[in-house]
Image 1 (cartoon, rainbow, N blue to C red):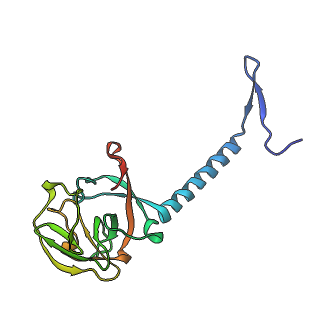
Image 2: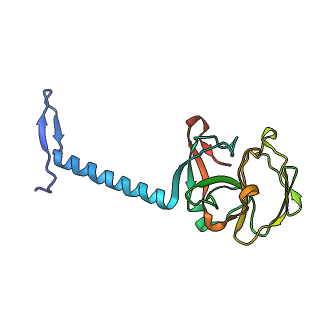
Image 3: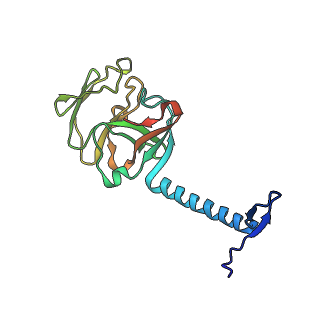
Length: 192
């Protein structure tokens, strides 16, 4: 009985039988596997995770210039943005550029910055992710964040262009949460 996948049997010099797969089936299998891989990759990149490259040093020491990381694009479609999240968003004044910063305050928060010290809802926040050598002494008057707007800042405060310069970021511009650094390998790990 033939099932359409007949294989020829070849006798090797030692008398062992080995199946020979016809070339056509191997090529068909390879093309099918490649197509499935491309479709799965496209789905992941379009809807779940997007690879991005960090350009600049405003998020030192967590993220360095030219680091490669995955951005979780589903995180904020099903969940909320929280204080401390590292987010990727479209630059408010030029939507062809993306920025990566840390969320410092969320809608409804009362924010002020005194000589580099950040206060949210009247209390100083713990910013252990900002090394002393990256602090600055800029101030920001008392601001209550409107609905759907987030205050973002880089961890390298002395060089970061962030909400202190361009104002709060509208929710519609935030498209992902920094999830995992995958390159360089010695710095691979979860973004915190």
